[in-house]
Amino acid sequence: MSLQRLATLFIACVLFAALPALGANYPAPKQGDWVARDFRFHTGEVLPEVKLHYRTIGEPTGEPVLVLHGTAGSGAGMLTKNFAEELFGPGQPLDASRYYIILPDALGTGQSTRPSSSGMRMKFPKYNYDDMVQAQYRLVTEGLGVKHLRLVIGNSMGGMQTWLWAVNYPDVMDAVVPMACLPAAMSGRNWIMRRLLAQSIRNDPEWDNGNYTTQPRNMQRLLTYFSFATSNGNQSLFKQAPTSAKGDALLTQRLAAPFRGDANDVLYQWESSADFDPSPGLDRIKAAVLAINAADDERNPTELGIMDQAMKRLKNGRYLLIPASPDTRGHGTTGMAKFYKKELAELLEQAPRR
Image (cartoon, rainbow, N blue to C red; front, top):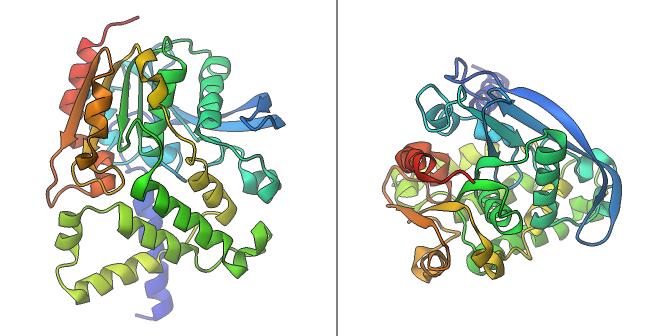
């Protein structure tokens, strides 16, 4: 088989793996766009229009559930076998025949307004997580007409934004499930790695101050390095690469995957977390909280004790720490709902409706 044919097959496999599984056990998502008028950023800048793309699963008559995705992802990234097919099917914790599931593309990501789609490049307003949550709130309440949510659940960036939802809009939801994150200031390895990624983009001559005509060739290498450093889990990574030869093969495979994003969009996404800190507002949270982390999460080390201290401030909170194992994936563990679907079902059974 020719090298060109092999490359074509590899790219096809990568693209197929990124799509929702065929024959999913939940209804097909419906997609839509809503435009937020005169959107004001925390910097004071205003855009006349901000488009927010979203997907919904289930009928609007169901109990509303908001699902928030991770950095540089989109709502489509939550429609996986390990997450959606474990939660949205018949008899599962978020059965789509009972719940109205809302999956927005965050401001700056997916098919929502972002630096690359607006044509503004680096002149796009510098947004932060509060801006992204404000956009989600406006989409849910103004765009979809939902005034109260049964649940907000989010992973990684989406988990951090879930904390902000609970702090900023304490009367809007009954329960929240922030995953793969800490309710504290962005700090330590988590921030330093993000800053290194951002600085590497900014210092790349091919980035050209954001005015590139083709994507910088180093983007895939940067993101692969960041992933290995912060998102795999030691036991899982050792299982995949127990020798240098297998490590080389795994690295080669990851590097061969094409970069399909936009460098400016990625830069904005990672830098948007710099001032994240919900801790001053934890006492305002009224929703029942199920916080979920993995013991081998590289970005959110359990030994710091941050989550234990935060839980003491919550009126109705529970902390689930998933033990590390060869089957967990470090920061990526919470993308696999099998580890917490029982606890999620219990939360929804027990959380008071307000």
